[in-house]
Image 1 (cartoon, one colour):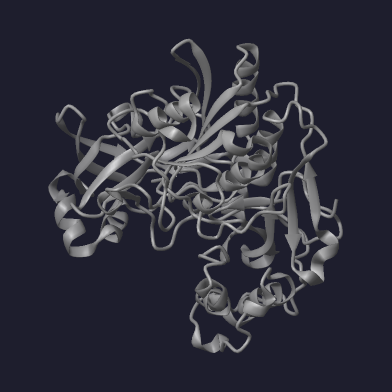
Image 2 (cartoon, rainbow, N blue to C red; image 1 turned 90 degrees about the vertical axis):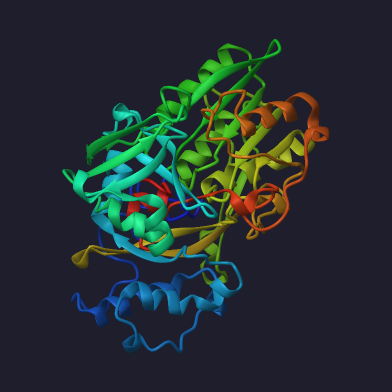
Length: 477
């Protein structure tokens, strides 16, 4: 193969670096001599922009959609320059913020160490009523033991008790970014005071300090379980992210349990999963490919001038693997990249026995390589490849709903935990597995759309300028 299994990454903001290196003929991942080699070793804005242009000029997946007339001197940052260069691709919905600059150190720490600094909560906001809710909480993070969990509403927020302001006021006057700004930088020791409202309407005031915590890809509370649905055992796996290496052990343990219990029907809950490492996506495919070893999982396609590095990924044997007969994938607008790759790759093998449940997904059938300008701690994440499934299908830039054999509208019910059979999306997934497409009202519309009340539903609270971890785990603070 032209590209090794461990060097690719697909995510809302990817990481194709580290974790196994790469083929010597390909670009450098995670350090070493940058590819392409910069003409200078300096870190002035102009020199960094030159490096960014050289990367895109040689590697960008859509060379015909690169605006080479952009004047770099008209831009005060590398990111602004990148945005201008790829604007034609963005206009065609093919590069929706997927090409960007990030920190080498910050991204490598995320992938290799699987940790982050913050409160450990993923936030969503009500676009109509100016409210902010907890979508999920990481168990080993500072906020969870102080009462933050799925469905809890943040009523007030401030740097201290004396500076508390209502979320409604902040949202009305400054919009969602006003809330983001008040949450502060992702540095250990940063402290904020909250007034939170539990599902039972109880309100409490708490002060929480940000700290380093492990990013557990699969929750120990609800992330992997077997649901008894009227005597039938259904495997449920909620993967928060593909970006941390620890997901490997979590997935193997979950599927070993599924295999031990004879599970053949599975719910994959990717509703907030923005993607991550392709190697983890391929492992998940292997774990669902007991009878398809040696058959095509996915294909990776680069621009014509780099076609020698195109590759085909096959299902590989895994001791913990099962062979699902039905799969329900829970997704929403934040479901992207590696999550979509896994789903699309299973379609040829499941046919009418696979469904997307919830709402339409992001629409990211492309991935990035990382190109390092090490002296400046710059990593350019450039869209460089597209993935397709066995049948060469991979044109889901408008979301997976356009290519899925079955789609089923369902709300994201934050009044119940994910994986609870009473939670709306989980319940609809179980219903599809039980009765097939007859249970479904099809998903329609743009990514994230499809539910009747979608206009009033929550959106993930994402900063205008997300950190490396927020690109991979949208809405995390």
